Amino acid sequence: TAIVNRLAGELQNTPFYGDFLADVQTTMSTQEFSNENYAGSCYEWAQGSSLDTRLRNALYHLMHVQPTLLANPDTPRLLLKEPLAYIRKAQSSWERRLVKCMNSMAGELSLPLARRRTKQEKEEMGDHWAELSTDET
Image (cartoon, rainbow, N blue to C red):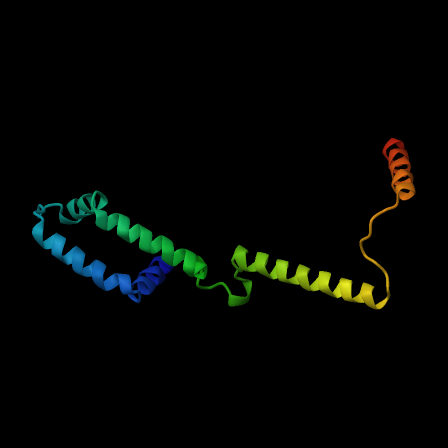
């Protein structure tokens, strides 16, 4: 219930909440519900209305904007996982920096990192490759 309470608190801080609450109050005041099972009939009515869809969409958006809301509140902040998109972005940035560094070092040493093989080198590589593929040691 702690996660639900946090989600509800965060949802109340969004601009969506004011409009949604006004719509719920307006539509609830126009409906006729039985007094015996008021909560159940309200729930059944809400399931079939557009308000249910709007609330689900708002919660989905909130959980994807702030994925740490779903974590256990007792979990230390350092142990929470980063979103996968952040990790992929960091990885591509690191790879670009590494390639740039390798190219600059190779340039300083006058060693080409990539060059076309001569016909003789291609044949030697093909022969060597064939030997490696049949080697069973």
